[in-house]
Image (cartoon, rainbow over all chains, first blue to last red; front, side, top):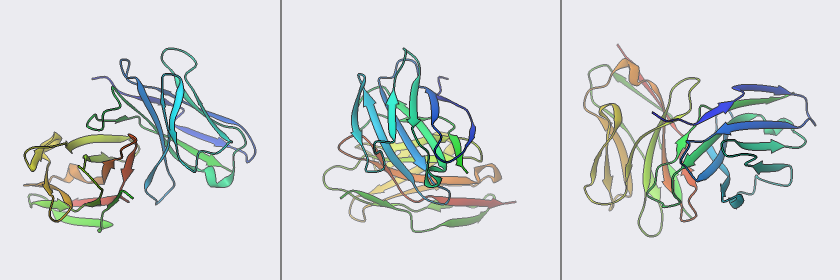
Length: 115
Length: 112
C-alpha cells in the first residue's frame, strides 16, 4: 500500500539554526500539506501546496517558513531560523485531488526539538 | 468559523465492550468529516469519512461512525473493543479551502 514517508524521524537543532524537513508524498498525488502538533495540543494546519505554488497558509506559516518541491518526489518544509516554540511534531500529508471529499494521507511525522 | 470538538480527553473501556469516542462539529454547509488514529510513534492513519448518504459509515479495523446532522455529531464507535485499539483518535472536518481542521484528540485506553 502506498504511503507517505518523512525524514528524519527526529531532528534536534539549536535555536536560530535552519532545518529542512523532508517528505515523499504518495506518488500519484498532486496536493501536499504540512501540519504540526505541539506536544499536548491539537494538530494544526500550516500550508497546502499544489502545482508548485502555495494554495493556502495559516497564520503560523510566517516568513521563517518555506516549502518546496525540488524534484518529482520530495516535498520539503524549511524553517530558516528556528525558535523554541517551533518544537513540535511535523506531519506531511498528500491527496490525489483538492476535492473536499478526498482523503489526506499522512506520514509518520518528524519530531523537531529546538534547544 | 468551522470547528471540531472532542469533549473527552480520555475514554476508558474494557476489552470486549463497545466503545464510543465523541465528536461534534460546527460548519456552514455540508460537512465532510474524517476520523484518524495515531498509534505511538506513528503518523495519523485514516479510519473513515462521511461525505454524504448513509449516516452510518464503516471504516477500517471494525470501526464505524454515526453522523447526526441535528446534533452536529460524528461519533466513532466499535461494537467490541480490543486492547490493540488503544491509541489517540482525532476527528476532523475538511474546510472549504481543503485543509483539515482537527479536534484536540481523545486517548482511548482499552484494558484487558
